[in-house]
Length: 305
Image (cartoon, rainbow, N blue to C red; front, side, top):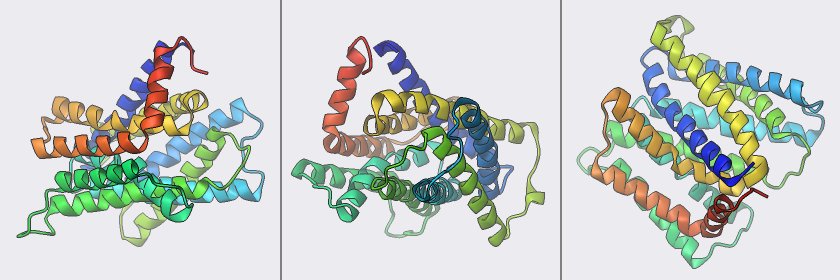
């Protein structure tokens, strides 16, 4: 794979995952949030599992470590993350949600410092502060209405980002030969089951789903296009870039979500929200400056090694 093809796939993946925030916003008009997320990942998980069965003989967990990784990824990175994301997007737009989710790599650094003893440099500390300042700019809390819908929504989506970041850190100490597609497939299915159970516990009803053409379209898009197909692109890039540099995709997602929200929903973010995104990205760039430099060097080269 030459550098231009890799860069093209990188941008495409950012567009697909960014568009998912808009599709979620559209679909929430017709689905209860937790069951919406559950159905999406039942479908996506089955598709990715089918691909794993087709492409490798290591298509199911074999060891206790494999099961642990599936449990962490399914419980936090699929179940917890998407539960709070979908609930949060009942209060804020997809573009705003995408900006808050982009804080994830910064939270990963924070958790890794606290739980795994990673060293945080002075520039990294400045990056953490910038990230949280950015979230504050996105939330724009009003002292006269601390619990406004925007602040509540940003807070819920922030928990979604924290769930994913915590899951990413908790999986780091484990070493396994399980292929990424196999791990992802079973994590999706476990996460879908947990989301479904959460929907039942919170009295969501499948009977409340409005099966319109728009509803089906948003679900199919999320499960097949920005779900299964996007993850297949992700697996290819993961094997060539590595997990650290792949985090940069998270900063294409808000741009994609904002442009698509404007194009399809007529929504625009305000200047403070845009400034918040810049602050979050600047914080990430300080923390992951070496990975950013490595990615730029890889794209400029003739091949990805």
